[in-house]
Amino acid sequence: MMRALVMAALLAALAGPAAAQVERLPQRSRAERQVEDSNRAIARQQQLLRDNQQTQFEVNQLRGEIRRSQQFPPMTGPGPTGCAPGSLC
Image (spheres, rainbow, N blue to C red):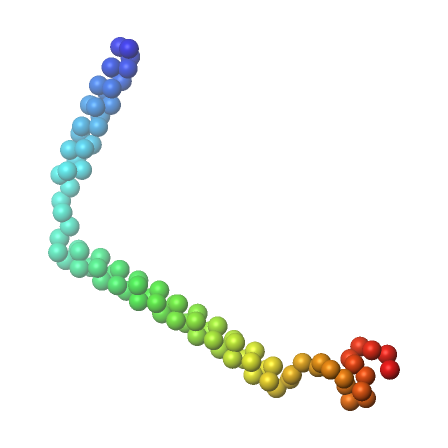
């Protein structure tokens, strides 16, 4: 029991200065807040740009696939000789 009280007192003594130190930190200036806000806005814009670029890339990929499928339709059904592809005629 005594050991627990000593430990609690020791922890309280160590935590006291640390808590007081945090309270005394200076607040950020208006200029610092504006810089941080600007940095966050730039980061958001960059993320939106990356998302838009990825979307455009995927759209272009799909357009290319559609164009290729229209230029070279799949070979299904009977061939020119009347035989189905892969059959022995």
